[in-house]
Amino acid sequence: MHNPPTDIQLYNLNIERSILSAVLFEPESLEEISFKLKSEDFFLPFHRHLFDAMLKLEGERKPIDETFLQSILSKSKNYDELAFLDVLSANPVSNYNSYIDEIIEYSKSRKIFSLGINLKKMIIEDDKSSDEAIATASSTLDAIDAHTTEGEQSIEETCNNFMDYLEKAKEHNGIVGISTGISSLDKLDVILNPGDLCIIGARPSVGKTALATSMIANMILDGEKILFSSLDMDSNILIMRLVATISGETIWSLKKGRPNDTKAVTHALELIKKSLIIHNKKNVSWNELRSKAKRVFRKNPDVTVWFVDHIGKIKYKEPMFRRFEIGEVTSGMKAIGEEMGVVPIALTQLNRDSVSRVGNKPNLGDLKESGAIEEDATHVILPHREAYHQKGQNEREPDVTDAELIVAKNQTGPTGVAKCKFYAKYTKFTDESHFEIEYEDDGSSLNDADNTIDMPRVLG
Image (cartoon, rainbow, N blue to C red; front, side):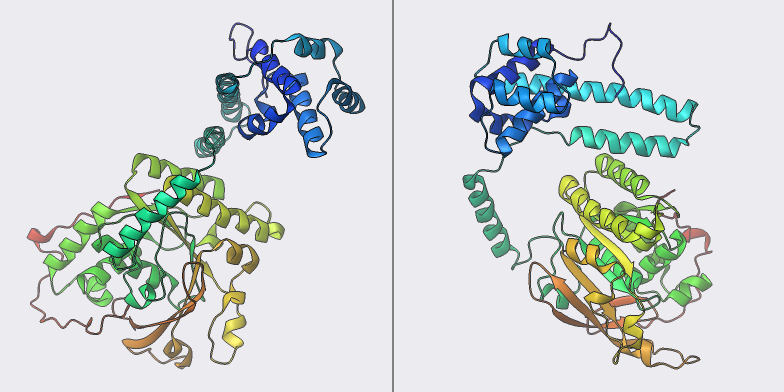
């Protein structure tokens, strides 16, 4: 870390000495102090080494006194006799919380100062792009901001929260959270809450994006606001699918530019514009994806759901360690969900094992890099369409087919199979018994002068 210039005071050695002296005077205070304070928060290197030595002695259940500390520091060649004497002669404090807050405030200020220097170096000396600098700044500031002094939740608070949950569950017939809009999934208690990582996995063309757009359409109609990070599909195709799903227009009529009901299309687009934010950029790193998403959540605190399509398209640093990097993505999405109060939903491809299996039905083991994904996921949904696998190479799949949403993992309820229908004309999964809509073609077109339609915002 770069030290600040001498005319900027971003530390207080007397406060640091007083905290360390308090531990020497009352060793049992270390447990509470170390819960809030880290060795990196001290400015003086010797103070960091001394604090680490105190923690080491505590872990080994040895006395935290002058003799043992001097021994540890001497062995690691970090002993400074004069600095240690300054600590021993400092006045210990009994009410140390305000002192801790002061040390943490100085620590954060130094890190922000150092970040400014590093960003300047990235742009001027290293010739990094502005996107890389922004991603670095965002992740560093997130790490600095994560250094909180919050304590554990009391048992009273926990019980009160549970009573609130019971009231909400009673009021909403057991659905506390965000519904997928597919009642057969609701019956399996696949209800989404902030921090619940939901994984949708399928082979190409089986329907993972179709299931995602079906869920998005249902959530939009329920008043949710959504961020969709599209790393694979063109945003115009995504909008077309959503319009078809919400309006009841077929994909084919929209492709031709001749919808049967332009008012329904206009209404669908108005809903989408109010409720959906799209990030449409390919070949992004996890760091960039993460920082962009968090900026959206801060700017739009009413966003409740975050879709990523799909995590296999994220740019990974080391292909040979891809499994570990995907684990970083899934655990990171889960952490962001908890921190920002959103539901993270990640799409992923399955490996080829299910294709050669009798019945072609997927299972948890078919998830690519399944160890990390399976461990972090709260829910895993695997869409399956038997008709897709049974059709011949040159055959067309029927417009309406039976479909299964296999709930392979469910931390909040049972696993099982949610039966539904897949409507190819609308790329929609639904368990509504009468979704098919027949229209008379009145010749209306999106090209009519009175039916100009603005597309929702798409961010690069």
